[in-house]
Amino acid sequence: MQPVGEIARNGTLNAPHFSQIFRAEYGMTPSEYRQRALRLP
Picture 1 (cartoon, rainbow, N blue to C red):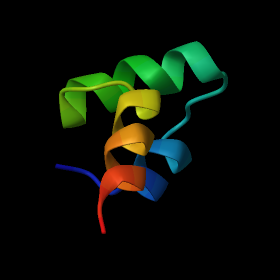
Picture 2 (cartoon, rainbow, N blue to C red):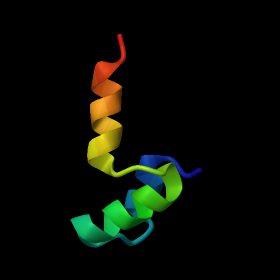
Picture 3 (cartoon, one colour):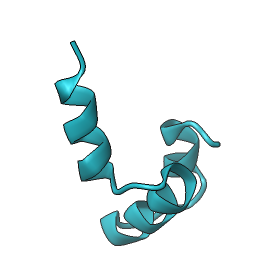
């Protein structure tokens, strides 16, 4: 699993492309990830 910063540095040029790569790596969209992170205590 790549760190998010690594995904961003590997040539993603736009938000849809970043979201596709993020979903492939983390199994969820960036929005889903953010929502889960905000629910943590």
